[in-house]
Image (cartoon, rainbow, N blue to C red):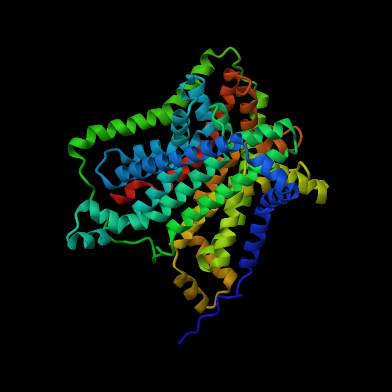
Length: 511
């Protein structure tokens, strides 16, 4: 009988995971230290104001409505594409995933530059949801294409109808993907700045930005950041309770029969109408707006040197940020999935909290730390890349964790029993199993970094410009024509990563 090597202590990855979390907690530590330094009386005076109550109401209402609408859109569209006989499903899949290539603030620019009617609560919910619903659609589609028919058939053999069988046998296996997507959407809404500023909808993020603009080291801004952290922790707790302790891993990709597609019949026309309407709102409006301002904008110009320089900086920083973020996410995801426990769960949740902080707070924390303890790295590319990694670690974590949860530990044990060391097992077995999640995480982080704004403005080396910063500079000055070329390049730079994401979960696999 072969004795499997002990798992505990066999790898340095847990220690690496701890270091990753400590790095991710730098901004949170900065906020906590600043809040404690204020004292209870000052903190009470800063937070116990009608303005804070208004911001709290706005933020919660926006987050709840956006998460609900994106889950409805993402889950509904994924079901239509993967589980019905919808024709041209590959094309629809590409169109439904394509809004990922349009940054939220570019989408808002498209709407606001055409009509001011979206500068309201309902308009903000609509525009933000149109930007973020692919964060739910893609993981749910990936989960649906891997589901086999057997569990639902067993449920139906026990007397349940088709709908009841789906809800009882299939939906629980989709829950991690739904919750992961919803968590990403919620965190993005908490941290969103550019889109909400253009839509003239005040939340904690826009208020914090205003506070820091009026005074660089604002106590009020730091106190508001503390409230944002509390909201993030509540969101993470809800997601954790919803996820529970269920496991969904299995051996291999599965060769079982796929469920029979549901025939749409007379519902084909309404379904096509809904999908077409969604595509027009999410893609048609911003693309039409860009074309419109390129054609008629009085400030429209095509400075080739500036555009080329901004494009090169954007792509270079996005690639570097994605690589560093994934390198930090891998050991942490492994720790959370393979060493389940209270400590690993707390570490994972702590890493998520940084994502709720606005980019400006993360940037200010790194500015403070670097000036005090390592002045030689202030306003250098490594610090900027670290800021990206802290901000977008959850995107990589969600992707890698989903793949790792479906990679059974049994395969690691088999590799170890054959004589491979823990590190070689990780490289030769685990990494290959999570390769799709790694690719998805890299693409998601690339998209996020290429559109990041506030941290880039504060931490980038002097003279560095990106497409996002140049677009923001022009659009905030209402020079829509001058902003349009940068927005077009932003969309074009995001297209390869979006295509990569959509191809990883091609619904054709269900046919």
